[in-house]
Image (cartoon, rainbow, N blue to C red; front, side):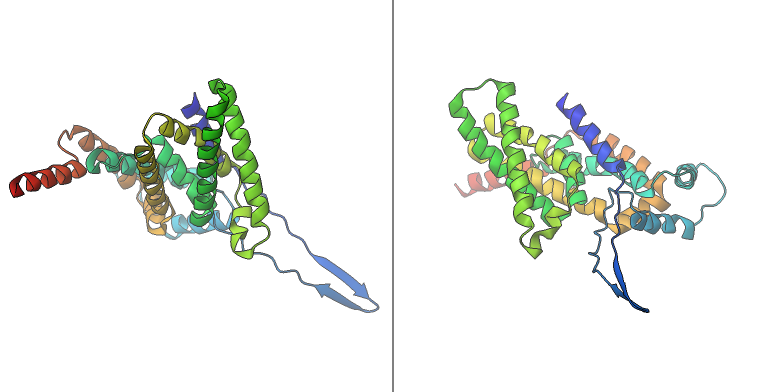
Length: 293
């Protein structure tokens, strides 16, 4: 149920529009009119939101590179062009087609390299959150939520509460900490980016707090910290892939290559039953130690 809720919030994040507001002040004296110009802050480009700036940029890529006649090699591109022309935001289509790539990267990192993360869904949702919030704002909020969750777990453990009330109280503390972070960010110019974060990336980060608490509950301190760190690194890397303009243009112009290529890669990866890269390194190190002895 928790994973279904996280997926629903993530999909809502991908399709929720941003409301823009414009303000202007003017006053007239006699025959001359004096207009006071107010500096408008630069709006951060957010691929997860179908703003005019993002849509125009991505749609321009499609319109500048028209597709040819319909064939088996470009049927997905034709469907993509038709969907965008009929009103589907281009950024939403890009993220939907790129999300399997992100999941495949996370799966490969765990199955082939041996990185230990908190499943596949958690790093993928964190990646979408970091993309929506911006890297540094996302890292700051992630750190606050993780710190408060850890401290709250230690405190609530002494109160011997049942699981669901304890989880509700934990999220209550996390909500208060996030609000205080937004309030504190309003006093410094270099933390203004945190104030611009939308509600849905914050909700995803808050809901994932339960996952990180479960990790800490069932493992030793060092093992839990290592798993959380590796989950964080996977999410950061996946977020950079999502935000890379070259990747976005590639999935727009050659969606068949990305979408079906990822599917084929997943099949071949699933057939691999050998050692992971980290296991090769571990056994090689153990072999060298035995030879030295």
